[in-house]
Image (cartoon, rainbow, N blue to C red; front, side):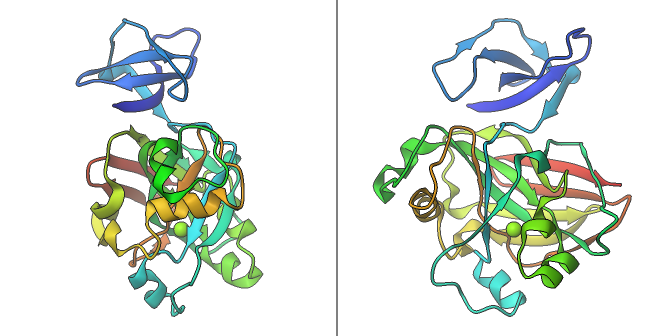
Length: 254
Ligand code: MG
């Protein structure tokens, strides 16, 4: 199944709803994909659909340095345990939204990542049960003010500006995340290209590990680290994140 959050043209209420994506249309679901839901039969044609970030998380958990080749690129030894950080829910935007270049920074980077969306509340999830806690997967751009990341030592400021978590276009369920092609394109030019099999800690290991630290809630996002090839974006640039089996997330910087 493919879940999204959407509004649509000619809807006077301008409400954002959860939806189920079918071939040429979206059907609203209620209340949400994290519980038993009802499908409302009206077909809303894709041409009038506006997509938004596909979940409303209580938190976004980031994983640093989770690709072997990226750790090498950053001149870091491979971590022995996952390196975690948080991004605020207020940083989240959907496809086609603008990324705002903050005045405080003069180096803002894209980072293509596979995002995992949590399905139900979980704490201390054993590795073998992780699957039951995953709703699905999406494309994620973990936008980072690289200069502030280096200056601060802590990553809180560098990762948390409004619009610094781009996600979409939707959530795909029933996907094996272990060996997907992940790519980013800056103004159409390929910048990152890797397989998720290059991750140091795979998706089940990450979810189980994170749940030993913090309770995961329905809708929470785990973004699983970026492959090598990160680089800066400028105002006016368009940045695409493409993941095999999921689709394409496009945003523009301004
Ligand atoms: Mg990252």
